[in-house]
Length: 284
Image (cartoon, rainbow, N blue to C red):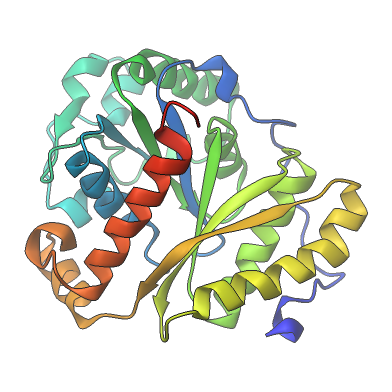
């Protein structure tokens, strides 16, 4: 795996983005960006089920669909909203009318698919998105930003609004290589000194911790040396490969509602417990 994770000189530079997190501009809820280096790793699945698990623990949760170009949170939750973030951005609807309840008891603000005009980070998109965040965060304990995958300028801007970043990856080399690239950008451009990581579809107990440790060694050798600052990778847990996940996805139901006792659901509940104790407690 270390060969797959070793940085290559041909790694493309990320588009220009904010130099540092902007979370201080939006007081209120703890904002957590759930992101990934590549698509297809279960990022939106984690966002939705983590929201349900945090809601069960008494947290007031909003999931904001920040994947403006290829949003699919509505598909995962089997929701058919009449009003989306697109309508809010274009002035066709009020923000309050776009926030709806999801199965699991949390609120969602869905982007709607095909927001091509919002797939580039223009000053207008920045301002509109920031206004939405500032308006909604005082109402919740935690806001999960389900970002797009990769390191586009829109993704990096969404991540910059969060005080914490949760990277979702799988054990596959392509996923880990892209996760490394995303973490490097967060360290170099946004000057973050830590990100949190969850390994989805883990084959064996302990895989995620071993992967995180190996990835940390690569970060220490290259990113921390280059930036002059430490970049700490915090392992938040593993979600095991579980046939119940595919069944829930195909049925477009939350795993925590359909099979709450399966291994993957229990792992997500443990992730919620860890997030609550480390990030949402009064001492956090």
